[in-house]
Length: 580
Image: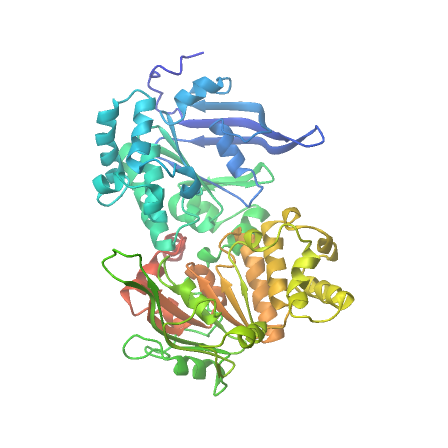
């Protein structure tokens, strides 16, 4: 076997950088048996090529990537097949030999920079560590080189950033640090495992643009793991589709997008909101609205106009009137307060959906907390069902909260793992003293049926459910007290595209059946255009544009909104198809 510590002979021109043939992976079960996770996967990635491995959770895409890096979790085992890098067989390497491969010949960009970076080590030192470990530079030289690598990875002011700790950086900057670590040793292959799934669309686009540049300039091969068909269609030369650990279809991105041949591929594409045509009629209207409709002349939303256009003269369920929220800053700061929300006005009518969109830090989640009275406004008014609740407190506020509920981004984090599903759904009824035990159990059963779950889930705990099932449980709990308003804070961003589509269809159905008003918080405009009647675009705490959904998304007037729309994944691929 070739000594992996030596530089290999140059591969032939037709030799793929990564070649996986007949890969079989299984996980040991608690009963002592094994469960197959990957079955007979063949995969090739050439120099300068981006290959996307796509599929739903459990399809085997991350298992395939981790097997290629010898990073399977405990209990996982490669039971068959071969893995070759530049023609060298890596299948039988020892753990120590793999340490010489990872980082030096193969770079990894993991999904979550929060848990992938050492919180007590400066980011420059973490980049330099790769060079030191692989003997490519002395420590002093490595620190200098780390600054240049951060610059190559698109980090602004890299010398200053190198001295910072991960918690001092935004999510996008932390992801760029991971890219700098991945490219530090000049690897032939980069495995990017959901590298942008937790990022805003504009940050996502900049990260992926940078990876594209690296591929063009260095000829690096990239294996991109993603559940986002829009990202795959935009960025990959070829797409490999996995279902149940088996490759069901592969081919050039343009061909696969235009002519998917396997039913599973067609289902994934149909469920991907980012691949919907730009000519798609938005649910809130039947075509582009006239310029200026529903929008105040100074760019600020006219809440009354928005409601009257959607609801006639009916009073809105929720209205925010010039709300402002300031947070006190620590002593010694240049400013005494941080203005998180500044003069925001909006209205949500019965049976309507108002979507607040914007990047992280734009103020949309703080606005939602003001609407739910989880934060007190520094100025302005919060009006619910025609009643000013800005200063409500104590028992009066508690009584009002029966009328508005919230569904959070992470259903697992928001469900008590000690409770059964029946206890979770019935908890609001118990808290407000609604019905006796038998009546609450009957109500929980009806709610579970309403969100299209089988009755047997009532006896299970959250750990026994899939992500989509847990989110349905969270929705059922939110409906228990028959609210008029539901605030949905990124309710589908943590879900696969097919599950996303199911949850969005469920929300639309429930809204029609119960006349619910939705305040929908999202950074994903592809999702928003499927469900929203009205859209408000937030930037730096202010609403910069607001109006009918089709008008804002198809004819944006503000540069910031145009940038958000242009960053929707899959947009480039759809435009290529439409002009072909």
